[in-house]
Image (cartoon, rainbow, N blue to C red; front, side, top):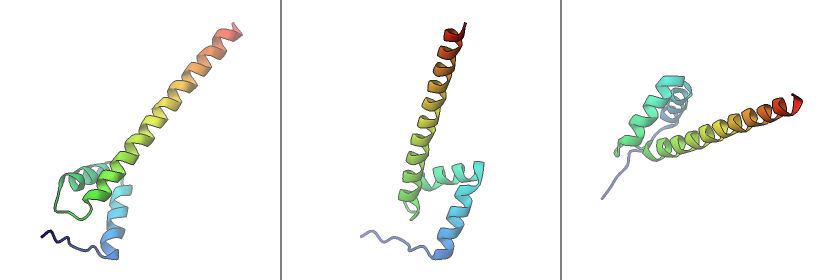
Length: 77
């Protein structure tokens, strides 16, 4: 039977603070996502998926803005 360790409020606050740090947070999310025994496993996987989706949307937005500005430049000349 699988028993998971319950995390206290202090553990979750520390987790959220670590995730906010730029490089350390990303590395910790990868470590937690890879560790099957860590209770933060599912949280880390979900957070990485959401971050990947937001990153993809930002890249798409930059591409559309670039194409729009290119179109405006062509139309102006």
